[in-house]
Length: 178
Image: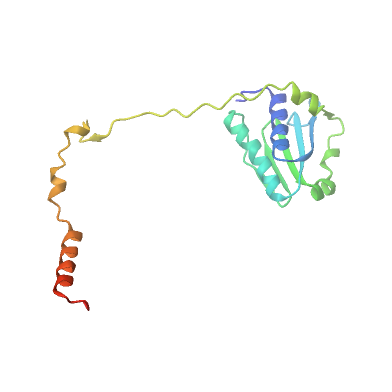
């Protein structure tokens, strides 16, 4: 289902975190057979709101690029999005220190993020939605706007004109208390 190589998904996810202001962003490549995913992306956010915005950016990137993913999970200082072969965690500094998930995968190899991002190709633009223009239909037939008879609209009485005329007549008689 992925339209991008797995490594590119991890790196673009890291770019999303950096674009949202996350710090200490790390991309770890796991050896074969270590876990059910190939890459772990970690980032530190200054607040829950920033963590949510960062994982939402990854989620949207996956959605636009048609990359398989699960809904965003977490809250209270730790949010994640599972992109199937890449799992992205964004935590507050307190939670990252407390849970120390950086140390869970001892065999993981850290990617040189600066070097990798410089040679990373930009994401293709998401396709524009296809708009279909349909003619307005009346009784299952297309209507020509010039052929519509608007004279029926002129026969509706103007209620505002009637009340304004009555008020003007009263004012002309000199009744100011009306």
